Length: 361
Image 1 (cartoon, rainbow, N blue to C red):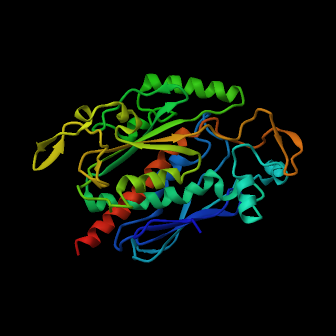
Image 2 (tube, helix red, strand yellow; image 1 turned 90 degrees about the horizontal axis):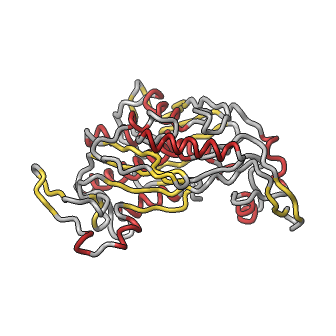
Image 3 (spheres, rainbow, N blue to C red; image 1 turned 90 degrees about the vertical axis):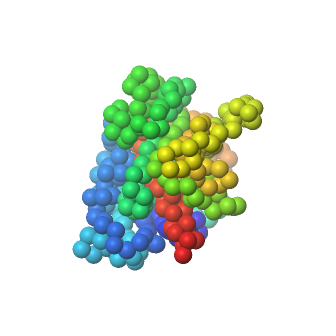
């Protein structure tokens, strides 16, 4: 019922925000891939709460346990079970949710759809659901590196509120450069402005959104299944399935609509032993198929819906009330969204690569 993603490399996530555990089942990962918890943990650590003063102070180590699907440090080709315990549970922080649907949250829609909802923390609509995605994405990324060698998937915060990061060279971007600042923006000057803006929002008990840009290098030509499963369509599906996402654009995106065709066309040239393009307005995808250039896309993420400011709203009976949120929440979720974007990208690319391998049999 919407909790499974992928065609051949399939991931099903489970768990609620303040339940006993969250995690994922990965089905379709090829056998004989070397895999331990140490391969998965780094990305979970980048996603976890409490990393800095810019994020929620919920205290979770987010240590992953592989429950099944491996033996002697290698995958068996059977379903891989992944689990992360929830330790810092505070369901009491969400008592008002039983009668007051929080503005811009999923409390009301879940209740109307199912006639029931998780009693605390947003349940499946909480960002803690993404733990399973990140764990599964780490496995997909390791398999991609084994399959293609030099592949690199790197996301970074490209804007917060009205602060924009200058263009970054897609050929030199690394996760080390991204993680050098607390806000995960590789440009130090822009990062400092972003941090100051987030701190202002936090002091005002408010929140901010922005954009995450993702760059994928080292991919072969040919990934993507037209016409309904074009690579950019699958990436859009993956990104817009993440909590708080409100937009997706690839390559030139909406800005490209202001160019003439003569300006926008990516002209082919010889690059070593293959064809390539001088420009990359296509964002590495043409006709729904990867063309060998870096895949570049952006994801728009809204301001966090839970804020400390008192808000006028109504309860489920329509009576006017004032809601003042409790609990621990991110003033800006962008820094923690970076590894989630990378994980969902890896899942899409691993699935596309397996489909292409099957097509060649």
